[in-house]
Length: 116
Length: 113
Image (cartoon, rainbow over all chains, first blue to last red; front, side):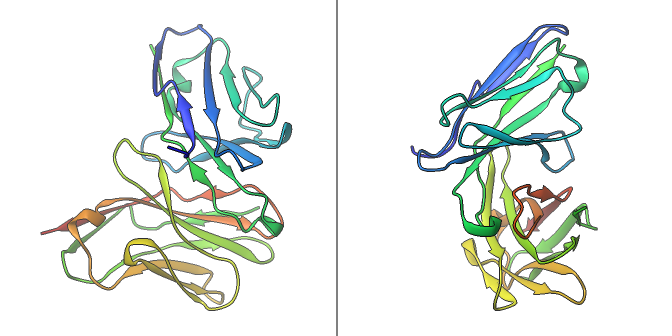
């Protein structure tokens, strides 16, 4: 399968613990995005990378959240000191570098976080 | 700022009937518009996009969408609905020459046999 891969698919943690999610994009895609989706809502933009550079970060992303893409391939999203409000589906997507932003995003199946 | 509105939380249609899922957008400059579908416990799947040119765009699974600049709308349509089309549909917009894709809140499509 050469689609976007996310791990783990499900994570249950206690409040205050740290969690990390991994995303492996489609190999030839140089753009990688993280979104968060809660029940009944559309995906909410968190951050995105072009190669290893993090080019934009949502103002909604608190300093407990950090994302990296160290070699321009896979990416990690870490949430420190988790809170119950962090419970959500975390979606990763990748795309090619089409001119002017015309490229569609290809999404993984998501990592569901439950904070107890 | 850019935003997307999907005014209907749910659309119900009988199998074989035409369906429409509505979307309106707000963006400065030229928009790029997208439709995605999400099945239970699955990621979002790309259906179609409008970039430029013909206002009627065709996509996967027999879906099409019509871009209407004057009404700032991009409604999703299908001439004959299938029960298997039942899913959550998201409209999304991106402003020209930017990278952030903004999604609507989604519309649940229920097709009854």
